[in-house]
Image 1 (spheres, one colour):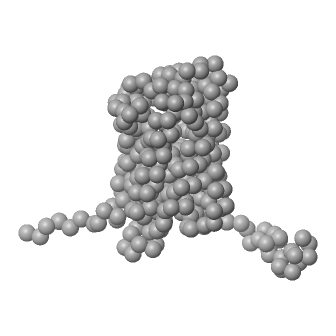
Image 2 (cartoon, rainbow, N blue to C red):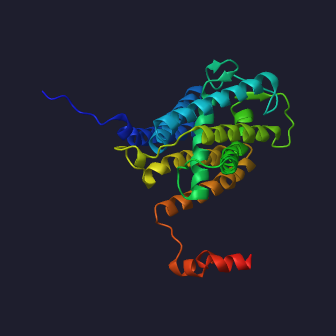
Image 3 (spheres, rainbow, N blue to C red):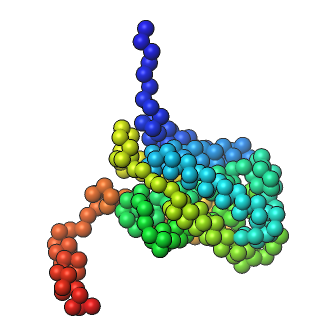
Length: 297
């Protein structure tokens, strides 16, 4: 009897990431009906697994592993310093709501730093380059792209922070009269700093290998790149429905919706679905001779 032959893991990654995405969105929807520690931890683990599988498919296994290491390592260290010494985000203490801890930090928190960092990486690439994957670049370009990705990540925090503190009581802030619905604005500076460090370190240290350069790997298509965008969209819808206070729901819609829409437009350009009309191309300055542009400058 001939044993069943299974395709290698790197060829199954699109199916794995899509399956985990569907389960993640279902668990996220279940959380709308009532939050529990088990559901929250389960959704965080599913988001982590979905993003890891997606990153391994889009970037290559080695680059994805480096991003996991950088995201979870930097994320845990920042949160440990924050909860112990008040660095980055202000003074706070985690409760038992988010499940088991490593030191003072719930295990799911550094996992979320990786997942959000990966999503921010893809969205920033789609916005700027109309491509989900970016190759080696200069120091300045990496810094700009990392800053854009950090902004995408921090847009998520605008709505989730008050919800996590006042509804879930996932952590307790020492200062309870901050300028952002009771939250301290310092937290957003911390989110920008930590997410920028994660994305900048990844862009400088990782050698990304797109599927086209990995032999028999599955070359990404539009539906594959929709996986990280769907993770971000799912988090946005959750905040729009359950954000606290109610003003945060509108903020989440526009703060997260704008980069999501811009990234989707970039995705359509990448696939050739959205293209500039030929007449507009000929009429644009890009079509002028170089000498004419130099003279005009």
